[in-house]
Length: 444
Ligand code: HEC
Ligand code: HEC
Ligand code: HEC
Ligand code: HEC
Ligand code: HEC
Image 1 (cartoon, rainbow, N blue to C red):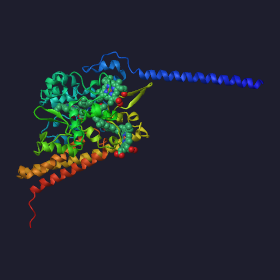
Image 2 (cartoon, rainbow, N blue to C red):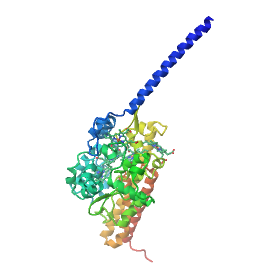
Image 3 (cartoon, protein in one colour):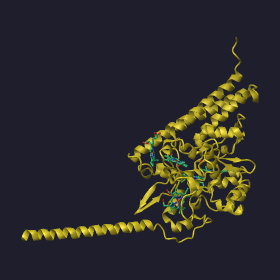
Image 4 (cartoon, rainbow, N blue to C red):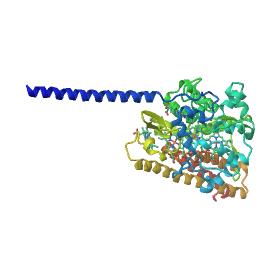
């Protein structure tokens, strides 16, 4: 009898302790859920005109903290945030861009917080007249477009484009900011850049989809790349009103973009050494990424460049947008079950191979320049040199596409190698075409 009583007491105790623990757990969960739900207490009233990120920071301090860290300047092997002079690092570039503003000043890019300041400081705006269109991707400009267009953003965009850069610059106060990627009422991510909206519509049309609107038709995962594709893309200024235009009507591959430019007879400048009408490629991150295995697997820009971090029960996107190689634990290890050192080595192996091929392509271009100059000195005419100059244009656009793309091949390794292989081939073909003009035909 005695033993059954002690069993009873013991059992009651166990049940009591278990009940207590379960209650504590439930309380903790509910507290955490509460915490997760109350992501913010609205302190500032955000509108379409709130360009100041500090105002947004009152409601979303964690994201604002991350955003502010984009002032950091840490270098990686092939990238990072230190604005070193690329023309000194790689002297071939001065000849490659001979006759163009990029031979004056061309730096490694850095964080979003600098996007207006770096435009003010570059010799490309100080020594050369530039249009208001330059601001399209460098500042919180949409409210200005809206105001100028009398409520119509697209109209304002068209009016602002051809104005002098300095005049427009005075009216833009903040670099890339929260309102450029977020709807101030719902906080949903969205795309605002007119150049992107027109470009993606043209691309989708070429794929048989009419009237494409990313803000209503894209998936959330697509939007996590589209927000970046607003600016990290190849572009040119179309026509006299200098309209920022993304050349995507034939597709996103390098030869599809080239075909677009060839069809409209466009060139950015005439090369000072060879006289070839050339194209300058600009940061085609979105285009190259779209050809790679990560894009194909549904991995978005934000997955690597704005990975989630845990803060208590909160999942916060890291708004310190930067090189993922400075943040491998969060940027890569969520998907790849290897140590950070191994993932870094894999990325750098890709980049190193790409860098070596890129040097070969640039050396082949220089050899082409020398041969064209020698042919001219020997009396070759423009029309005789036409074939060599046509090949110069093709080779240089490809080498530049990979040089201007900021991942050093990582975003799509095989595509980058294919493009550089073609660049080397076209450059050497062009060199041979010029060489043939100097060589007498063999005796028969
Ligand atoms: C799978 C991960 C991944 C995805 C997805 C990805 N990137 Fe990257 N990105 C990288 C890595 C790795 C680098 C190389 C960084 C370095 O060399 O320091 C890089 C480099 C860059 C750089 C240069 C950074 C620097 O510090 O110099 C930019 C800009 C960039 N990516 C933009 C984009 C955009 C825009 C997209 C989407 C269209 C994208 N990335 C998609 C991993 C990724
Ligand atoms: C389509 C969007 C877009 C437009 C339009 C644009 N930029 Fe940029 N710019 C970028 C992006 C993205 C980067 C960072 C990537 C890079 O530097 O390759 C950048 C980087 C820069 C940098 C820093 C690195 C460097 O090249 O020295 C300068 C300076 C600059 N841009 C000047 C200009 C000027 C001048 C114009 C007008 C002729 C212009 N930008 C128009 C998107 C744009
Ligand atoms: C409104 C245009 C715009 C948008 C949108 C934009 N960027 Fe940028 N980004 C720039 C410009 C301009 C720079 C160069 C700033 C400079 O060098 O002064 C830059 C720089 C960068 C860098 C280099 C940072 C460093 O530390 O070197 C990375 C990485 C980057 N952007 C990734 C992204 C990703 C990922 C997205 C989307 C989540 C994105 N950007 C959205 C215009 C934009
Ligand atoms: C270059 C584009 C870009 C800019 C600029 C930007 N964000 Fe975001 N933001 C994103 C993306 C991408 C996400 C992830 C959204 C998703 O996956 O649905 C995000 C998510 C968020 C979220 C949701 C919670 C989270 O962390 O995932 C908040 C809140 C937020 N951002 C606030 C801000 C604030 C405040 C600023 C300005 C200080 C800002 N964002 C600037 C792209 C941006
Ligand atoms: C959201 C998930 C995700 C993230 C984040 C991610 N990856 Fe990947 N990665 C993948 C997938 C999926 C593949 C395709 C291979 C497969 O299906 O197994 C891949 C493939 C690769 C490959 C092989 C590429 C090739 O050409 O075969 C490398 C290298 C790689 N990732 C490196 C990285 C690095 C470095 C980072 C961080 C900067 C990173 N990944 C971030 C999902 C991811």
